[in-house]
Length: 294
Ligand SMILES: C[S@@+](CC[C@H](N)C(=O)[O-])C[C@H]1O[C@@H](n2cnc3c(N)ncnc32)[C@H](O)[C@@H]1O
Image (cartoon, rainbow, N blue to C red):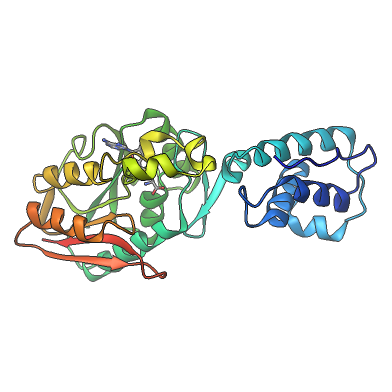
């Protein structure tokens, strides 16, 4: 944490923000001003626009102490999403805590591809069923449920703490009746075969785990990150289980790491030799999804 003088008793909003910005090193955030504003808005229970409207408003002693405490947590590396208790994903606000991975913007590509595939099968009688494996905060399952009103979704996770957060998010977004939370290992808890399997499983390799920046390594759950020696251990295990849980002409969409395209494709080919297999890149042209159309 960078040394910065304490904010004095009669600190205004403008001064408090300037103080917080000085506390955040570039290792912690690329957006120090935005982070400071979000923390102060959270402290005051205001929106950010109101901070800009009343920059001379003086903080009460309690507000100053609360803001100082939040600023210190962030300056010591705690991600903003855990401090604020939520993160936006696919235009929706998701509750997060240390039981779950903070949903990443790159995972939105998986939701877009799943939605596009579901739309091609919209005329299916009886509706489609999907499974989101390793649901974490429920970000993928809940976004899909809202995008595809006729879809039934099973959301599984091995972490009971994550499933509690996912259930609260499903409730908040009004889809608790269509997203069934199931505790267990990979596809094992599914009650029936589904048309679509999506997953953003842990895929960080052992070598990458050793290099993770502290704001990830010290705060996000290891269970949500560790993918074994080459990062593909869970993906391999899911693919080994998948044929028993996927309906004919089904689709599997798995998020992968940027360096895993070729290995993931080979893994897909071993388990689904007859399927169409594709690696999809993200907007930054990095390998991002393994797509298996059976
Ligand atoms: C990378 S996080 C993804 C969370 C969420 N789907 C997202 O995209 O933000 C991986 C999730 O998989 C869960 N997980 C790890 N091993 C699992 C297993 N064997 N079976 C089911 N879930 C598992 C973790 O608890 C974690 O919630």
